[in-house]
Amino acid sequence: MPLAIGFALALALGKQSASVSPRSMYGRSSRELSVRMPRRRRFGVVSSTVGLALVLGFGVHALWRGTDVLGREDFCQGALTSAEASALLDGRGRLTEQEPRKGQVYYVFTCTVERTSLSGAPSASLSVRPDLNDAGTLLESGVWGTTPSTYSYFTGDVTGSVSENHAWVQLPRGCLAQEAASPGSSTVSGVRVTLSEGSAPRPAMAQAALRAAQHVARRQGCADRGLQQAEPRIQGPAGDGGTRPTDPGNACGVKGFRLAGAALLGGAVKPGTERFTGRGTRTWGCDLFLEGPGSPQVTFAVSKDPRFLKSLRPDEADRRLTHRPGLGSTTCYDQNLYVDMSYNDAYQDLAVTDRRSGRKAARKRGAEEPAAERLARESLFVALVNAVDERSACGGDPRR
Image (cartoon, rainbow, N blue to C red):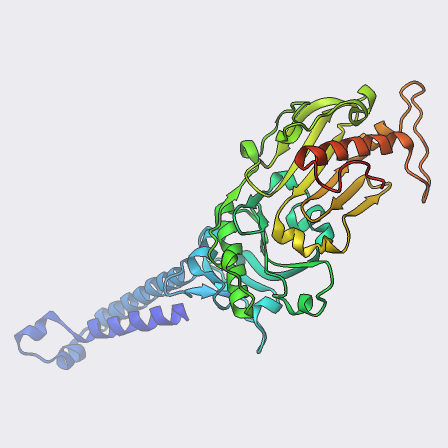
């Protein structure tokens, strides 16, 4: 279509130039001059017209395909403005949207926006889609990042996380039909924005995800004032995502979180470095990179966010504790705190290895956790919980 417009414009200009001559100023009609025009000159005019048509045609085509001139103002039925989509899909090309099937609305299927190249092929894309997850495993899943300490988290009245290619914002409870159909379940709904490739500035990802969540909440009639009036403010990770030496008396930047004794496997590992989100958000993550054989590592995800905790429905019990033997993972939450801890194989192997003989305790399917590993796990877990909130029901003896 852009090529056709350029050709039509050029042909019109060429036709006019071929039928008009400067000599018409002296009383001769343009038709007479056109008839008397030598054949060679008429051929030159036609050639010039065709050349002009090609230039203008390809120029209009490049302008149409290579920019957003006369493009759409919004996408995903108003969830994203053109400026917000452009900030995520930086570069040359035109923004287009994959049209939904008739009768569908974007918050029950995936809306995809693409940046197309001059050839018309998509060069990058983003997706906006609803998200429903088990709240009990949210912080340990890919929704909030496989490595929580590398993510930024929203502050204020927004619950969610952001990276350079992924952002997620929690919706008020009951926004999605699937969630409303099971009001007693421990589920949490949200809106997820994902880039197919490349990256975008985190503030731009945060803005897009928050605006999309606000739009869904308004359309679904489940909006609350806190979410609708919120601004896309995020924090973390601390130190621009780098690591810093661990203070063994205040690990992960938490005052009083001590690494000692069983947590350090009786001296088999030593405090090394850490990467953490920071203390300005109600949800944060931390990775401890310990010094020892095999690069032992322990990961924590913590939340005191009331919106998230309410979705867990802990009012049915004082606390919920889940330990997965063999996977090195423990999760506990009550009405005020959620903590997830996991460690890698290197830490687990060192925990079950006898320091004198060098033998590793055998682990059989369904067998109880080796005593040394249980002691190390409980020491780490309880030390963190008590440092974060000593009133939490997840503190004390994790086996009770």
